Amino acid sequence: MPTETLQLNEHNKAEYPPMHTAEHILNQTMMRTFGCNRSRINHIERKKSKCNYDLPTCPTEEQIREVEATVNRIIAADLEVSERYVTRDEVPEGIDLSKLPEDASETLRLVYVGDYDVCPCLGAHVRRTGEIGQFRISSTNYNEGNFRIVFRVAAQ
Image 1 (cartoon, rainbow, N blue to C red):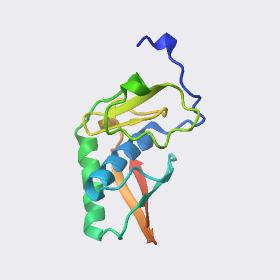
Image 2: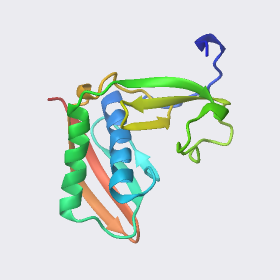
Image 3: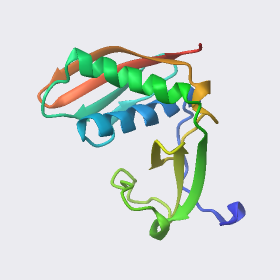
Image 4: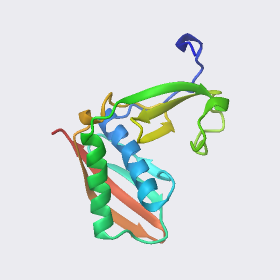
């Protein structure tokens, strides 16, 4: 699909690419580990970020450390981060479009983190996961089915 014919929605935020890409990896790790959906609410910033997940029980400290270790393994794998433009009809099976705004364009940008994650996204990302740096979960909180992770990334 030629890029000059693309009609995408406006994106109103300038993310910090390492943190935003780390969020993609965290989301996929949470989905694989707990069978949950991508974060329901997130706040992605340069210094620290937060993601909230719907979980029936609070993860154990061991599970939280394993999530952190898995995210760091994916970062260390130095996977390519790429994009592909598709129409809604061309979206691969299994990709959740429920978070798209009602006025989302017919053309979508899918962001791939190697073969580990893919989702529609208009944000800024690194080119390779090795550019992210060290991922660290700084705190967690669980309240009535809502599990919040606060995390940071630091250059290695």
